[in-house]
Length: 405
Image 1 (cartoon, rainbow, N blue to C red):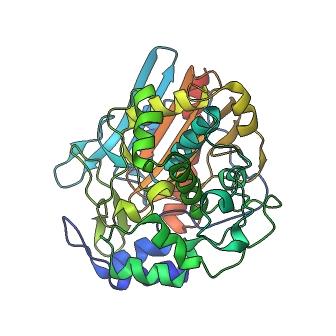
Image 2 (image 1 turned 30 degrees about the horizontal axis):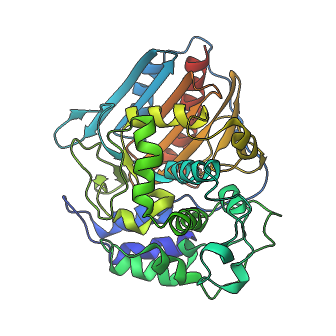
Image 3 (image 1 turned 135 degrees about the vertical axis):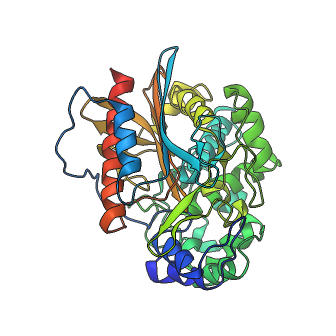
């Protein structure tokens, strides 16, 4: 989705809970909608001076909140074996001045893509799906030009599928109907007249449509809604009690409110700006920092599928998550490898208006970290917010170091 097209969303978006100035919404959407702008190419890493090895993580979080362009609140969950520590600074609600808490509900943005990977690989484990299964086999109503794209390529973001998030028709629909609850196929069909961007399997390109395809293939193979598959294949075995994929725009209480900074009016509450259905399997989920930590530990430890299937998952290609996570990023099947100065972890990041997410764990699941902020920060911003994002990546790496010891 181009910045110009995303910026056009601001003209008609409706505000929820609290009034939001139209210039503020234009600024919000000019940064990103439900994903960071698509990038492609090699593994990346920002150049920076290495932080002190004796970092006080909580002091770092307070520093991030105090920065110009920094978020209202930030929370990190760090777990080493049975020892879990929560570090937090700032607030989850600027109006009530509520402290940010590990049990508050938040939008998890593109970390939801890892959940679609969990569902798909669980079904591969059961023999219901294969990584070589094609769109043509399970969703024949989609364009013939897409028919040979495989489940594995969609999980790897090497499908070449055109992304509906870049469609002018999708932009227009989202602008006019921010609380709409369309079906996933309705959104995919915005680009049904487009050819593949490249031969599948030959390039990496981060795209929201990939995870829509993954979830639609899972539905077709099982005859069950994706939301029910999440419940039976992911939530229950990993004991996730506060995670969901709603259709509408509301977030259950207690809420970690998401904000976007407006230079003229200050922070604007964008928590319920859009319906979850508009980003569905690519970014519509809601969870808490504690549940996100439980998920990533089980997902990376292969508690939902075998180590043999995980070996396929951990075939990495040059590519970064959106936004980039700490250290050097490489892309696997619905997972990313983050090589930091303290060691390697595996996980996902996410970015959506009001929220930025990072979660990762070691392969045995014994060490894990999540970092959540209630502001959208990414590498495409400028000025104070870009500086805040770069500082956030440093904090993510320091949190990884705290987890690894």
